Length: 400
Image 1 (tube, rainbow, N blue to C red):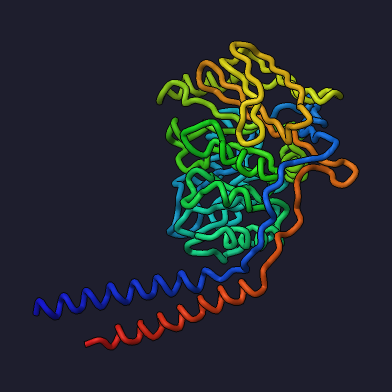
Image 2 (spheres, rainbow, N blue to C red; image 1 turned 90 degrees about the vertical axis):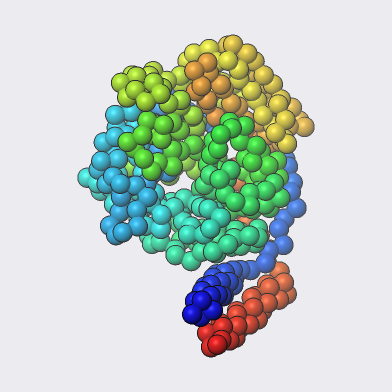
């Protein structure tokens, strides 16, 4: 009897393992890319993401990575879109989009504010992306996106049916490494402040390799009823309204900044609401004709830094509300971060070298090259493994 039970358990576990490995093989299909070599930004001009700053339209508090309850049994949030919207409006959010996993969520009351965006990814490594401006959800995913080629294939595939893509929470993505960020392209926005730190070094890995992107910080909201989870990361856009046309133009133009906000009151909602009405903000930002970038904030910061190539600190000022830095010929790019006494942090978009006579920005949307021989070889190997697993499944199934 005991032997029969052990046999049954081993057989069941063996079948489950084979099925899992078969699913990994089937979902691992991908082209194999020959990635461009990392190359710093270069050119006679400097891209200014704040060139269209219009103080009449600044600043609109925004959240783009936000989950709600959806129809069906699988939910990552217990509150419906209308409830989440009301909770966020208490913190003076002007723009709120709902990015549920693999589902387009309808705006709860105003179709003119509808933004088609969803979070793509079922995979076990949490390699997730926000897909903006799509008409339908792409359900294909690699169960274990281990290789850079698989990640690039997802970006390319998603990009065909969307307006732009955000790379989500890199610090919480299993397998995040410097080499991958030096290789991957095809996303326009990097999600910042996705872990415990405020350095965003992974952003500099990509920027230093010549992959330009803007930066957004988001709550990745799942629990609007917890003070520590809501209104702790946000963005401030310079755009006239909350329609998708305005949002798209602004997010692809770069005239915005991202922000970390403390959980004021440590559980006291009254304190949290009040303090969120008086956040430090950017009063002025831009670039002068001589290549000097500048930032002025509304309150004295503990420190303001300029980061550049390889995450180097190019300039720093302490206990003041302004900073300016003249970009040198040897600087491929520069971005600014300001830390405030109560824990607030402001992140600006990067100023970067490019050739204005050739491109509108430093962003390189050209496709990565695919190696046909390696692609055939890799996928034939997957096919062979899948066939072998089918044979193994059959043997285990009839194992006596």
